[in-house]
Structures are given as structure tokens and as C-alpha cells.
Length: 301
Length: 84
Image 1 (tube, chains in turn green, cyan):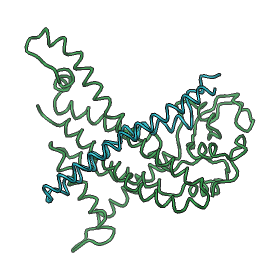
Image 2 (tube, one colour):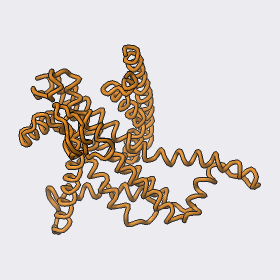
Image 3 (cartoon, chains in turn orange, red):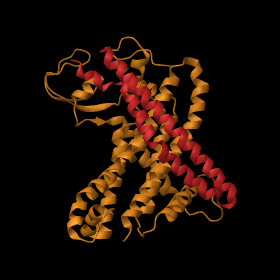
């Protein structure tokens, strides 16, 4: 089912170019004037355009947008808001059924975990945990679509046969870092809000080593700061790379399976079933760590 | 060129091998302790199970980052950039 024709300069379809093609985002960015494009055309002036090759997307530099990742994540986010809002608004007397029941099960699951792990009082943590969990589950489930289906549909729709279309948002580090950095900012905000600037700085410098006489304490502060600083910085990085690593490895395996020809059907199913566990587990871990980190931020010493 | 590819491949073997080694031991211990705990107190099994899944997600975090790096090295080898 692999697409026969590929980019102009990727003439033959080797496993490597197939995988490169499927791992390349649809990048919108500005190419400088006089830039020689993949198909030989030279640009007279700076143009906003879609990259036709990995080299072009690199030339677009930092300020380029992965449209497919942005599009899918925003779409799934709106899907989540729409359905949850519709169910929340419609009140059901008696036992809820079908879809309403599913939404309530998700709510109860997230609520139970928030109650268990979150010791402080905050009206942000509930909706935040629910959004993080459901959104990441939705984004991850995009991975279950067969690898060639959506890009093929997109190529037919857009008419551009060399269309890059990476469907799973969480295999793009931008999304996972976006999630984890926003959680990181919340951690810092609530640490300062709950413990004040002094408390937050004190938490970074007075733990774990502290002593009575000030001279020794002055020596201990830098190494405390180093220890606590690294563990603070490790939180967003590990959050982001854990989700990204899992989904990227899962996506790669789907790509390898897709290259098996007709043997891909049973293997795709087997790996998809196992991958459902990975999808839910990674969303659960991301939510739980968000709750735990924020409850640590809310603690008073 | 060949030396870069060969050494990257060797590096990737270590990344994947060590990661799998560590994760296997971690999950083995985790599962074993979970079974012991729920055997001793069966009523705690559901609570232990959620905690087990949480720790399971944490165990393979570093391995997954290693696998992600290994896949990046194999597919888009950054060290080749230093050739030209």
C-alpha cells in the first residue's frame, strides 16, 4: 500500500526514503530570496511556502510551522471541548447510557486520581488533569490509523502528490515540549503563589543540605542550587521526551510493519493492540506527574 | 564516512541493548513485587495495580528516550553533517 510516486529528487522508493517521507512534517515557512528549490525553481523574493523537501524545511529555520501537527492537535482539542460541553450541558435523569456514560467514566477516573494524589486545594487542577489526559489520549490514538491511509487521502484532496503529512501530533517534539513547558510554568507559578518568592527560592537553595552555622550554609547553597535546579529542569524535559520517545518509537514500528506488503495486516493489528496500552499508559503517566508536580508546588513546609 | 556510520551503529546497539536490559529487570522486579503485595493483601490489589502502572510508565521513560535517540541516529544521522 506504499505510495508509488515520491518527491522529485527521491526517485526510487527505498525503505529509507519511505520512512523519511513519513517522518517529515508538513512545514510552512519563509524561504529566502534566490533559494533554489527541490524541483529546480529559483525564488525571486522571500515567499511563504510549503517545504517540498527536508532540506527546504531546514532552510526555513526556526520560525516555521508544522501545519499538520498544529491542525490535528487543534482539531482534536476542539473535538474534546465540543463533546464534553455537549454532554455536560444535556442533563440525563436516571442511569446515563452510551456516550454520556463514557464521558462520566473518564471524569470519575480522572477525579479519583486527582483526589488521591493532590493534597492542596485548587480549582485548576481538575480541569487541567482532565484536559491533559483526554487530549493526549486523543492525539495518541491518531497513531492507530494505518500509516498510509491519511497521507494518501490528503494527497488526493490536495492534489500535491509529494505531500508530507505526519498525522500523530505527539510524535512531534514541539507538541510534547509545548505541553510540558506549560506544565512547568504552572509549577513555578503555583510554587511562587503558594510559598512566595522567598519560599520558592528557599526551596531551591536550602534543600537538601542545611546547617545551623551560616558560614557552612553559605557553602552549601550553591550545591543545593545545582541539585535542585537540575531536578527542576529535568521535570519538563523528562515529561516531554517520555511521551515523544514512546510515540515516536511506536510510529516507527508501524512504519516498519507497513513496509511488509500484505503481511502488514496481521502485524499492524497486533502492534496496534499493544500500542493501545502504551497510548493510555503514557497519557495516564503524563496526567499523574502533572498532578503530583502541582501538588508538590502547593505544599506548605 | 564509513567509520562514522559504523561507530553510530555500534552506539545504537548499546543504546537499545542497555535500555532493554534495564527495562526488563525493572519490569520483572515491579511485577514480582506487585504479585507478592497483592498475594499478601488481595484487597489492596486494585490500588497497587494503578501504582504499578504509574511506575511502569516511569521505568521505561529513560529507555524510550534512548530508543528515540537511537532511532534518530539511525534515520537522520546528525554526525554525518560533520563530513563536508
